[in-house]
Structure formats: structure tokens, C-alpha cells
Amino acid sequence: MTASAAVRSSRRPFWGDLRFLLGIALVVGSVAGVWLVVAASRQTEPVYAASRTIVPGEAVTAADLRTVDVGLGTVAEVYLAADELESGAVATRTIEAGELVARSALGDDRKVRTTTLVVRSSIDVPASVGAGAVVEVWSAPLIEAGEYDAPRILVADATVVAVERDDTMMGGGAAALEIVIPRADVAATLAAMADGSALSVVPAAGSGR
Image (spheres, rainbow, N blue to C red):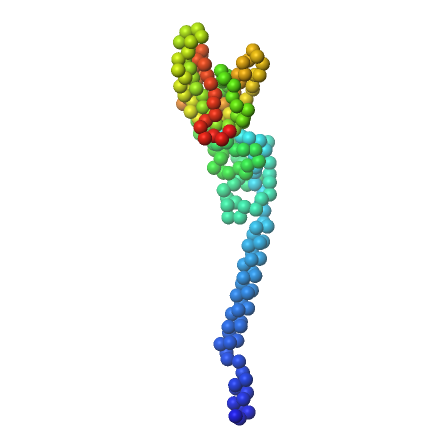
């Protein structure tokens, strides 16, 4: 074998060098991808969280919220940023204390179709029923003194704002509840309260409260 042939045989093929370079590029790309994911997960931005339980129909102001820094990534636009609360905003659903405020949970007060009433339940309500709980209001129409008709659902979907329980013997364990109800149910509810019907507030089926 001549000297020139020996030199040529000792050289590495070009495709071998290319494969080495591609391997380095893949490693670098993988490391860069991991770094970008980690960096993105560490990025936080200020959004609103409820400082108390807010029920449907309630006006929402900055006093009801607190600012928290969280890393939301691609879902950031779902939640209300700390500088985006508009005047006249109301809750369209219950927002639990500590919950991040979704944009969809707020609406315009001019479009609200609920109102708040205070009703007295003729029976006690469970201790688990508190602000934000979903309840039903049942009505037993008064027939004559001390006699009532069979109870029927008066409001199928009400949200509790506050509960005042009366545990005295005179109170009989009854409770007064401030509730949010659809405006469509207001007339029937006021009529039941005026004609002496016995109203009972019970947790809605599946409410878990």
C-alpha cells in the first residue's frame, strides 16, 4: 500500500462527521427546549382571586378581590388580570374564596337577571349550608290556621348569600336566609311570603354543600 493510499484510508468518511454534527445539534436543541419550558413555567403574572365567597348578582369591586402572582402559561387569558376589572361588574356565578377570577364569571350589571330576597325557613337548614351554597325553596300553601297543603318547589335554583340561624327554643331551629333568585321567581316568592305559606329551604340535589 502506498503512502497516499494509507492517508486516504485513515481519513474518516464525510458522512460520519455529518452524523456527529447532527448529534450535537439534537443535544443542543433538546437542552434549549427544556430550558424554554422551565423558563416559561417560572414566569408569573398578577391576576385577581376572590378574597371572599362572591355569589351570583353581587357587584364585584377591587375590595372583594386580591392580587396573586401565578404562572398560567397558555391559559392566562382565561383569567382576569389585575388591571382589567371594570366598574359595574357583577358575578354571573358563585366565585369561591381564594378562587382565581375567570373572565366568564363576571358580567355587566345591566344584564343581571337575578335579585336578592330574605326568606325565613320553617325548618332548620344543615350547618353545611352557607354563603355560595345552592338551595331549593319549597312552599306549602296555607289552607287554614295550622293546616297546610302539600309542599311544592317554589324556587329550584337559589344561591345563599348569608344565613342567620335561630337556635333558641322560641325560634324552633328556623333560619333566615338571604338568597339570590332569578327575577322570574320573585313574584311567586313574594306572594307565598304574603299569604302565609310555610317556606322551607333545603340543599339542592347534587349541590354537595
